[in-house]
Amino acid sequence: MVGDDGPMSEAMMRRGGGVTDMQVDAEPFRIKPELQGEVVLLRPFTETDIASMGPVLADPVVLRLTGSVHTTAASNASTELDESTLAWYRGLAARPERLDLAIIDLASGCCVGEAVLNNLDAGNDSCNFRILIGSEGRDRGLGTEAAQLITDHAFRTTGLWRISLEVYSFNPRARRVYERAGFQAEGVLRGALRFDDARVDAVVMSLLRTDWEAKLRGA
Image (cartoon, rainbow, N blue to C red; front, side):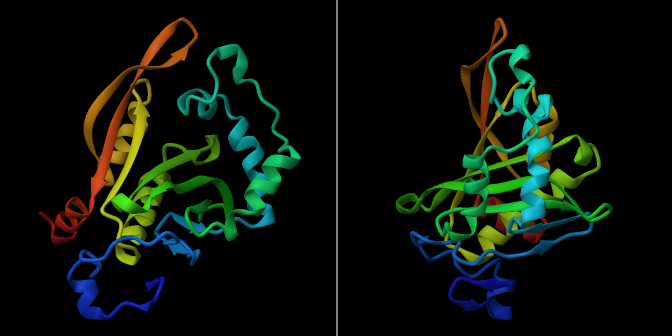
């Protein structure tokens, strides 16, 4: 893979990325990669991918599990993207402080979701991770591979030390995906989400560079 400042040597790759003594800069994601696995391809959004995100973002399951709505009744959303959302996706390629990649199901060639590294904190060498997948891409291992591909890329090509996320307690499937990618639970934000008549906890998880390096070594 190619880092922001050029190709990484084989020796650096063997040491688990070779950037452990570096600090992340303010624009670590200037290069927008294509990352291919066995079942998914992650790539910068094309116009076709953007169009596919309409039904994904309107999926009632996605809306609920991401905390985008607060009631079951509000889960019925339009599958058409409005102009501001279209402009948002079209502008992502020019955002060097974040990495937004479409998740392409290699079996169908269609965009089924997105994997995102955002909320960069350059001073602390950290960022946030989030992923969402619509109904056409669930329960086939696409999310697990997408999470592994994008986090591997981040640690190999930037000086990031920590990647974190929050997952709601009523989403155990997503938590298993994150655990398979190496994320570890750190704590609980009690009652962080109000949904219908319930208060839902959010679990804070993180993947540190040392966790990633240990995974590479098979520890």
